Amino acid sequence: MEEIRYRQVLLSSRETQKENSIIDISGKRIGDGGLTIIAGPCSVESENQIFSIAEAVKKAGADFLRGGAYKPRTSPYDFQGLEAEGVRLLLEVRKTLDIPIVSEIVDASNLDLFEDVDILQVGSRNMQNFTLLKALGRTKKPVLLKRGYAATYREVLTSAEYILSEGNSNVIICERGIRTFETYTRNTLDIAAVPAIRELSHLPIAVDPSHGSGRSEFVEDLSLAAVAAGADALMIEVHNHPEDAFSDGKQSITPGEFEILVKKAKAVKEVI
Image (cartoon, one colour):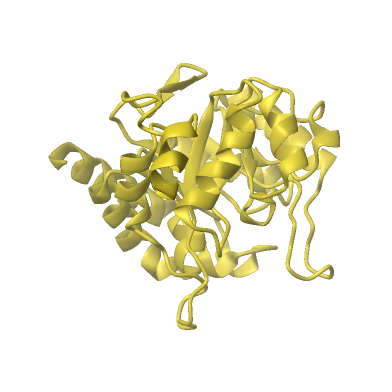
């Protein structure tokens, strides 16, 4: 009975809305049955770096450029991002190359700075930062909400509820891997989350295969599995020199590898 009551009351549930939600962002539609590709580096490192990667991923078929300006890291001694300067560089790329951008917001006080960012990402560590979620709900900005690495499906959907209940219906759920007893990979990508979220909710579901394993050599296979499972979007970390990346180089693929991945992913989507 508890599960029935839960599913009936959530704004994100299939009981509330039978048809899939479609989010239109700068003319690009997420959740309409197509495949949206989001790609770029884990963090913005310099003007040359972000422009060169942006040009490459757009040419290869990316619909959105991702890039971290504010980087919440496990250790306080790791690179924390260029912050406001990183946002400025992303906006410059957006204007120059005409590609919409995705970047993580970590504090509601930065909303004005992120006003022209197309999709605001909420990282797994902030999935239950309810103050931030409610603030995002009072905007109309599209939000990509990452599942926490120890969160259940119910927990990520109730986190989304904080955004929806404040009046913002533009929410995308993102599966990015969970922490299990396995240590061979950084996280364990939960492919079952894709059909499960699609059954429970009308919200679009994206998959991040880069964080899902933490290993670049697995990104392509996990991407294709996610597309076959019915994912609406992929979010992939791409770096022109992964070995020199300021953060998450081990899970970043090169622009050349990304180009091949996009072709295969679109082929799988056509079959599905």
